[in-house]
Length: 510
Image (cartoon, rainbow, N blue to C red; front, side, top):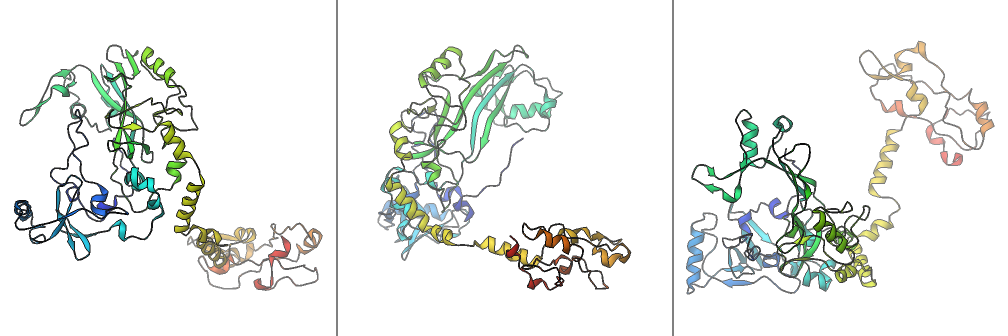
């Protein structure tokens, strides 16, 4: 069935914002088949948060402006905004000049009122923040989308296998939930005769049901791999570096005529432009956080650059790749779904839209991987801003110090004491000396065998004994049970070694 993962939430969602608090009525994606797929989305991070050099764009609601009356009339329909925005207020504009009628300036701060809950949110501006090292890199602010660094994860379905079968054994899928309603209906009504699946290209909504043609056979969709941490870089329709998402990398298998032998086995179809039907497109993950991923996640990651996992075989020659693909209809055995280009910068997968988005080229890859003195300086300043040198300067780390203190207070038991503990009839852990004096035995310390003084210890074995607990009461997990004497300095066979723990120092026996 469907997997559910509980991951770090988007900061906007965590603060209580909703979709329409960012996306206004005109801010929607266009038709997938057209060039306006992404052009409809006009909201940008800098529309609300500004940049290092610019503040958000704004406009004043003048009473003489006809648009003001429309804005106030629209807000009047929402009880969460009816009394919060009025004539004379300064409101935000997004990148498409659409007014954000629920974001206004109050004194020197920008305030967003949620369209859904009416909750008040203070909008932080980049210019008001302390100096952020990554923001001082000019190229970061010029050509990199904010989400390329601030997105903490991105869901990816790698290698979509579309499998067609003549007959389907539903007993194998009884514990699954299918995303396709036709398959799910068949699973729930297994006694019903099934003639095929819905042809969604011919589907029409009839008011209470979907009417369509029927395609014989059954179709299953399965992914080769699903993950949350792979974020490949590319360039989007704005000419900025963005995260690329698989959508989708199609592999077709057809078992509709012979269940034992595939008519088509993991076939990769070609697009109209004779490109592989292995599609990735620019994507804005809604997983934004204030803290960002480290520099190495891009500058030192072959996968993020689109070169694939270096621990596995990769495609070296794009020409031989396309030769095998066109002749056999399948990809070579060295192909991996997370490699989109060769080291020479030649693409082996396809971006959508092809004329608007692309993968990185060889020059860009070389520049990102270059560990120049400038990169090292910025990396050092970033680590310094995170107080990393202070952490390295510590001889003892907070966790280690706490751990050591806990060990000191717990007084770990020696082997001889472990041997003299048992459970009584009430399932309480007690000392053998307290539970039954008849089974008291002498226990030599088998662990006390330092390199120096072996002869001394051999003579001392007969004198060194664990002292019994003299208490008459049974103590459950008493700290006294775990106190063990440590070795002293140079021991003398004539000395009485049954002394207090504080008189021993183990350093001399290392």
